[in-house]
Amino acid sequence: MVSYLIRRLGYAVIMLVLVSFVSFVIIELPPGDYLDQKIAALSARYGLDKPFLWRYGNWALNALRGDFGESFEFERPVTEVIGGRLAMTVLLSLAALLVTWVIAIPLGVYSAVWQYSLFDQFVAVISFIGLGVPGFLLALLVLYVAVVHLNLDVIGLFSPEYATAPWSWGKFIDLLNHLWLPALISAVTGTGALIRVMRGNLLETQGQPFVEAARARGLTNRAVTWNHAVRIAINPLIVILGSEAFPSIIVGSSLVSIVLNLPTIGPLLVDSLRKLDMYLAGTCIVLLTMMVLIGNLFADLALAWLDPRIHLE
Image (tube, rainbow, N blue to C red; front, side, top):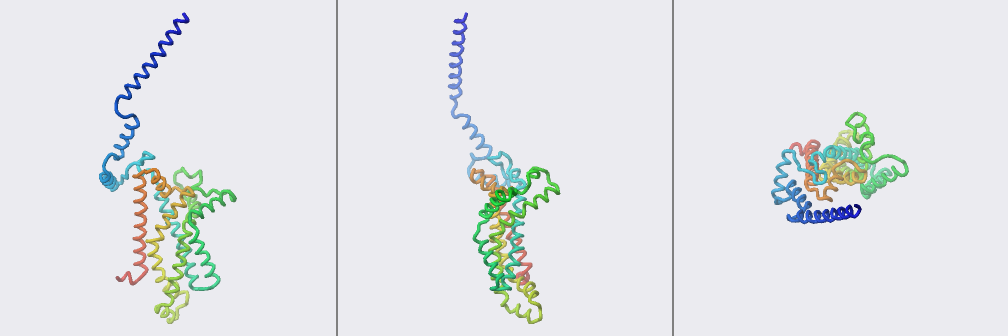
């Protein structure tokens, strides 16, 4: 009885081996394999089997309807992946721009008014430090000091309890409490440059005939400086705002966002470029370009509004 059972088990093992071998042979008969079929299906799904011009034209036409394609990595529509990151990018850029101008213009004006004074020399030192320290390096230093020495949470734009919570007044206040630090870091380099530009422009404007005429009419130095000289000296800063400052803030805030793990478009763009996620990367680049163009438009409108000569033309 035992020998019979052993023989039957041996036959079963042999049969299983033969069946498995024959099944693999049959499966291998068709050309390709599962991975080839999977790649072909994904290529057809994302249109990668089509010519380049067809893919671009199809993506561009769909983008006009609000469909920017599907992300390769996340396998979700690009609009869902970007989501609130665009709003956070705009908010961070505008906050950094506001901080830059609020700090740079008054310091540049008073540095020009008190030329060669101790205050002017102090502002010059601060400006050159701001120009020489990259934003991402400053973010690393702040991150190290805050986490290691002060035990503070400076990562992200929300506290852990608000990160995934729906919007509320408490979440908005939490955002403001976290927003000022990355905005200040992103504004450092731009602030140093604008201070020097504002100081030089105002020094040149103060010697113009219309400034001397304003002083001859008996106006105070404060009124002459702020109501006449600053209004003309600030024009180059507005041009810089659209052509250099706003794009630089976007690029700088992207690097700061990577260091501080901020939910903005910058880190998403870098990751999508590294992983060749073409539709996601292309959409991010287009959106950032739109932000720069809108910044240029507002700069031109502000310049025409502030400068009477441009307004009359």
